[in-house]
Image 1 (cartoon, rainbow, N blue to C red):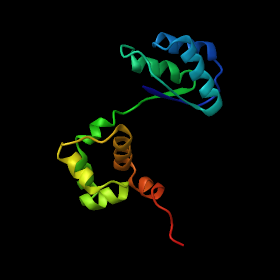
Image 2 (tube, rainbow, N blue to C red; image 1 turned 90 degrees about the horizontal axis):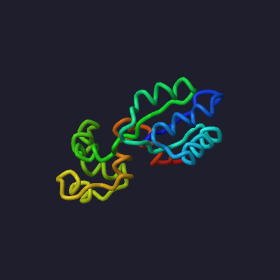
Image 3 (cartoon, helix red, strand yellow; image 1 turned 90 degrees about the vertical axis):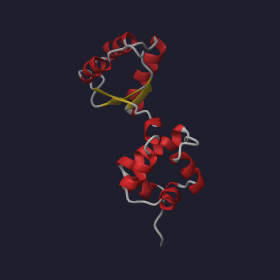
Amino acid sequence: MLILHRTGALDRPVDLARRLVAAGLSLPAAHAALNRLAETDRAVCTIDGRADVRALARDLRRMNVDARRRLAPAAATDHLAEIRNRHGLSQREFADLLGLDVRTLQNWEQGRNRPDSGTASLVLLFDRAPELVAELLSEPVV
């Protein structure tokens, strides 16, 4: 999966659509991605797994589109305790901060269960930007 971000004018829309089709998108999917980029500056699309992603990103950059690969959040779940420890949090603190049941976190850390992809993404986000997550998941006391 690629996340596309418009960085300038989309002055070569036909070339952009052709390049996305060459990477495995159907013509309607490429058209939809182009429309989303024009409307919101962002689009998400799934390309063929055999496509040369680096070459695609290089080509898209020349057309004012930045391409980023979505991380596999499941990888973070293999290192939950490591992530939590790196931020100096107890299981209780980490669970409370992310709105989780501490027993659920313990089960994940011990490999009995795995978090869903949304929770795994939240853990990845916390690992990279803990202040942002804490700010977004709380409100000031006035």
